[in-house]
Length: 160
Image 1 (cartoon, rainbow, N blue to C red):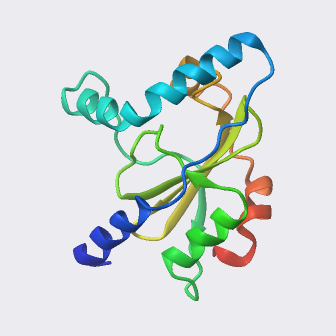
Image 2 (cartoon, rainbow, N blue to C red):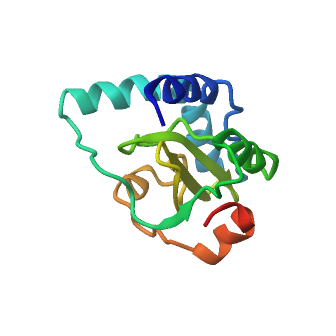
Image 3 (tube, rainbow, N blue to C red):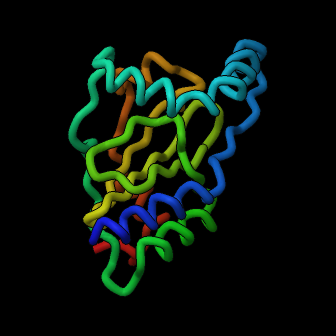
């Protein structure tokens, strides 16, 4: 994929709907929910600044490769099919090397399915705590699972 196409896709990604958090029932989770509603618009700046200043380090790509986008689909078609299934742009996430878009499907306040799509059409994902529910466990990847069978329900014949 040439750099103009990648730049165009990255601009398009900005227009995608954000993932919607499930409103929690427990009071402590409602407080977390309120915090994240305020913090989320600033997350990209905080993440990028902390990474550039080497306060935190993040390199490479996550584990759990599921395949590549099927040749008969464009990246946009693939992403839009996931949006139609309830995924949304996940702004509160690390940026992996070569990542075009980070999407998540929020199961409930505590857990999410997280997919990343890369410039080389790779699709990787995992099931994990939401950052809103357990931020420290989320960052440390505690409880992160592949759950490939679950993802294949969403992905179907769209990856090879």
